[in-house]
Length: 214
Image (cartoon, rainbow, N blue to C red; front, side, top):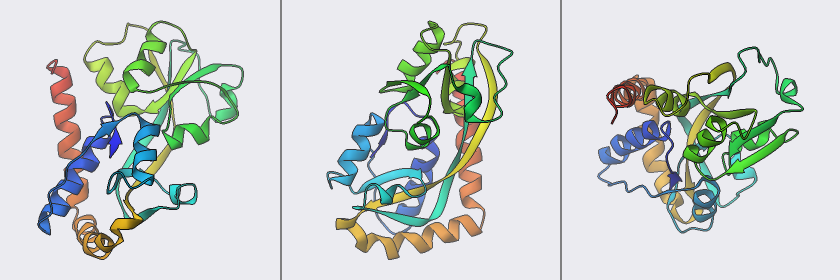
């Protein structure tokens, strides 16, 4: 299970596809809005989550965190104000900020802000393009792709990278037997640099496709 229309998740899908493939398991991914994907995974309607930030098992105890990071995201602030230069989240107080519902990193980082939530990144970017929010908080790659495709009007600025988060694969507790199978494979891929290679290859493909309008 994973978040629909999210580009950073393509890296996690590629990593898991290779990792599970090494042990003879095919991976199928269902894409849903962020909060719905998480609820379905936590309820056992899926084997787990492609990847999420560290520690969500505290809120969703039915999900088991695989200890090897398989990706990371840089979370940034975008706005139409070139003078906005937030150094901390408190610098966004007084602004209406858009986020995607169910993206735990964004939810936690903006919990003291005036927030408008939507279900997809397409909707989030639309809010900013139409001037319906002052800023959005989003992984950089999602907005970078929209800019490369010309889907955002001129005048949208990346105002700063606020945080970077490691991302971990999660399994539903009903499938805990997969943990000792997949964890050493992911560790081997990380140590040997294969995870980094997959990330680089996937980002290159995403950017190339976006620049070519695909």
